[in-house]
Image (tube, rainbow, N blue to C red; front, side, top):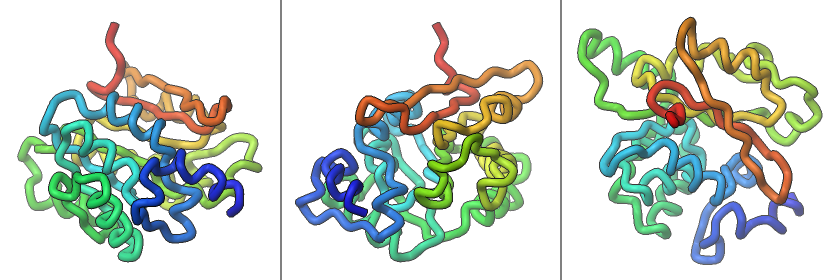
Length: 214
């Protein structure tokens, strides 16, 4: 935990103003600078509606809201939801985030079953599923089938029920071949390396309208 404590201001710049995190939050929250960059890519217009499927303690949801989005922040853990609500208040964006304590798969399936033929109101979905704690650093190739529970392909399919515009935040050693395959035949994806402390910390794969167009 010491190395995360040393980097605490990079996780939340307002860490001393009452930010709350549980133990998992310390090593799962996206560093603020990376979350800010992802928000620039995901929030393409003011008042866009973004689903943060694994919101945790709210690092990404806060940055989406600061960028001007309305956010649906989902997490199965009620303690993390309470932390996220507190953290959003500190950043002044709690009124732009709807916090839901639920299973993302249940949320997506219920929404689609209730409105099977309706166009989705969601402009984008952000996926940052649990990576299994710091032990992921010891894995040579992070396989979407075996390293995520549920597996990474099922997570992506659930997101597609809500929007084709998806950002997938994953460890730097994730199989690039698998990420490309998620785009489907004839479609493209963009893979961005996220730099933290002068090292590649993670990658973000973008799909749909989130792919950068020159």
